[in-house]
Amino acid sequence: MPVDQTTLVAFIVAILALVMSVGPDTLLIIRYTMSSGSRTGTATVIGVQLGLFTHTALAALGISLVIASSTIAFKSIAIVGAVYLFWLSIKGLRSGLINVEVMAGGREVSPFVGMRDALLTNLFNPKVIVLFLALMPNFVDPARGQIWLQLVTLGIALLAVNVVWQMGIMLAADRARVWLGRPAVQRAVSWSTSAVLFVFAGGLLIDHVL
Image (cartoon, rainbow, N blue to C red; front, side):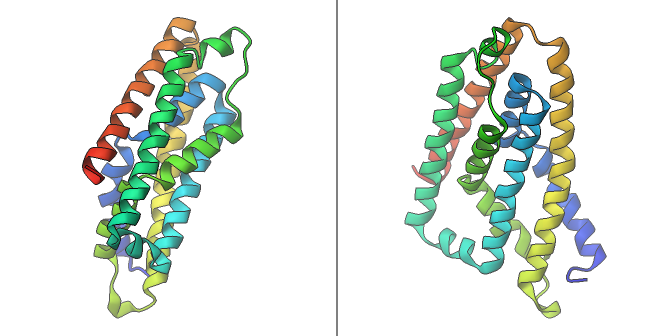
């Protein structure tokens, strides 16, 4: 086994708090599940995992280290991520309706859109890159060799924990959708998640650009 059991358990414990904290990924899962049901919610969860898988591959290949060591590249990613979050926020605030439109027979958010938005939000979140660069190396033992394989193993553990937690959130949101399906409540969910996404976008710019 590339990573010994004790180290793997310690890593899982360390990432639990990060996985369970509310971030843009969590907000998208709640928003899209509430607006369009479990199929879109599940697709959104899958989009997040595709982003984490990509980060794992980049970290294993050493590309993430190159990006983080380049101020221009890192800031560019932060800017793109912030702009995308701003766009998602404004989109939700304008439709305030993301869900009212659904209740009135309008077009729902498709699984593809949910997956796409989650994937891009995750890929352009510099905090995820920092996670792979600042946290994972602490659980890698050079003496065991095959560092890339150790990183992949830790990445898979992160994916597994993330899937369990976020699927739980999706199922809870889908169940809540049944009895919170009133237009006013749906509108409140859209506006509140949009406002928080807006704050996250501003935080990215402040922390990594300004």
